[in-house]
Image (tube, rainbow, N blue to C red; front, side):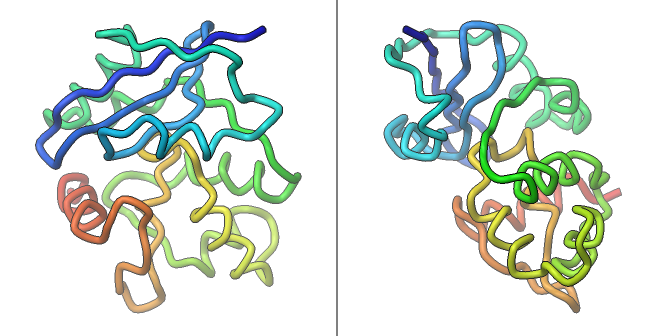
Length: 166
């Protein structure tokens, strides 16, 4: 039996909720006040059997507050746990190497993930990313700079990119 904890906090762009395993790893996160929008994103093999609300998630809550206050690198060292196929997991790892203020195209992202021809698979990895912010899928844009999609809305994606712009 595994237990996870969740918390919602107010940010400058709306409520942000994170689901965190007992060991502190982020299982899911995003700009929503509804934890059920996140629990469905967690891979079945990682899904907790028990979920409890906590006012504060320690290092994760601290990192979210610091990020939204302008300390962009605050989320970089937070451990994330996601499961999927080999390419998708490699693609999520690659997302964590995309620097703030330097968004990449989906084609460049596919190359970072190890398969330049897998542009659609790279886009799907962004769409299936459960740990928004900590795995910064918002840093992937269309060729030419158009925003493309984002689970939490293009207004949130635009704010994040502007917030991170150097």
